[in-house]
Image 1 (spheres, helix red, strand yellow):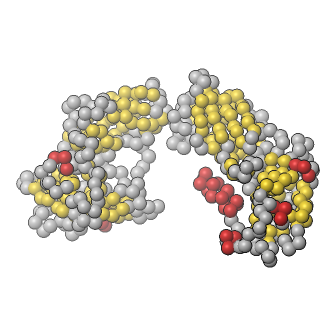
Image 2 (spheres, rainbow, N blue to C red):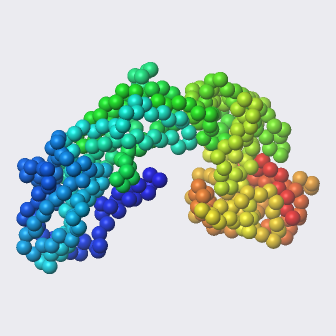
Image 3 (cartoon, helix red, strand yellow):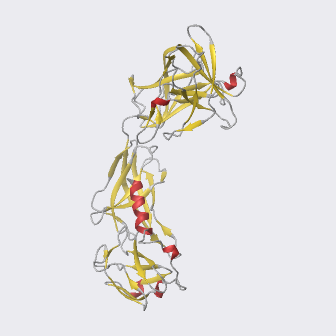
Length: 446
C-alpha cells in the first residue's frame, strides 16, 4: 500500500500532459514572469510570495476556508492558465501544480506550497493509539494542519516525509522512526502512517512529529504491545567453531520455551534448547555431538511446531552446519520440468530425479561464475560406486530470492538407484574445502 501511496505522490507532483523537458524555458525563473496578479481569498498579499517557480501561501490563524484555497489569478500577456481553479484547490496533504501555456515560452509548471498558521495536531479526542507487534507493524493516526506535501522551504528544498521519534515512558530510550509518511484519503481524512520497528519494546511512548518547521509533542500517544512469538526465518547457516548461532524474531516472550530440531535422512531428529536473549533474539549453543551436515530444521515453541511464513520453494535442507566458512553448500535439487511460474519463477525442490532430464542444483559458494568448475558427486547407496557429474557450464538466475542454478546431465553410465549427493566447487575433486556436506536427503534416480 505504501509503495502505491509513494507512487501516487510522485505522479501527482511530476506528471504532465507532455514532456516539458523539450519546451523552451523562460529567461526569468520567478513565477511573476507568468503571473500578473495572484490573490487568495482570506489571505493578505504580504503572505503570498514567489520563490523561483514556487508560490508560497501562508494562511492566517483565522483562515475560514478549511482545506481549500480559492485563488484568483491574472496572467501576463502571452500566458494562459490551463489548470481549472474554479472550485478551488485542496492543499491539505496534497501536492499541486498550476499548468501555464505560452506560444513563446512553451508549457510551464508552477508549484504551490500552502503553510497553515495553526499548529500541527492530532485530530479527534483519542488520547492513545495501540499497536501490536506483527510481521508488518504500522499505525495510522488522524492528523490535521499538515499543509502542502511536499513542503518546500525558503531555500527551495523539497521535504516529503515527517520526522518522527518515540520516547519510552519506562526507560527514556528514544527510537527514531525510519519510515513515516502522510497519507490522504481525499476529502475524508489525512493521517500519518508510522512504521513501528519489530524491535520496539512493549511500552507507552511519547511521540514527537516534526514537519514544515512545526513540532508536535504528544505524551503517551502510542502504546506498543507484544503479540504471539514469531521467528523471522527457520534455519540458516552455522560454521563449526563459531561460539553462537542466533535466530532473530519478535515477541519472544520469556514465558515460552524454544527448541531447534535438526534431522535428515542420515541422522535421527535431535532437539536442542534455544536460549532466549531478548524479545528479538534466540541463541543456539551447538552440542558437540552434532556434526557438520545438511539438515532439515524445525522450531518448537512450548513443544508445538512453529509454522513459519511459506517460501516459494521451501528447501528440505534449510539448516547448513558447515565445517568452514568458505565451504560450498548444496541447497536443493530439482529438474527442468519443475520450473514453476506465478508471481515469480522458481524451481520446486525434489529428491526424485529422472535420467531423461538434467539435474538442476542450487549451490551456494564464493566464486567467479565464469571460471570455476562445478560438479556433483553422487554415491550409489547400494553399490558404493561414485560418479562425478560436471555441469553444463552455464548458470541460470531465477527471480525468487535471486538464487542461481547449474544444470548437470546424467550420463548413461549412472544407473538408477538411491544416492547421496555432494557439490564440488573447483578442479580438485578430493579437496574437502571444495566439497559441500552431503545433501540431507537421499536422492532417487529413476
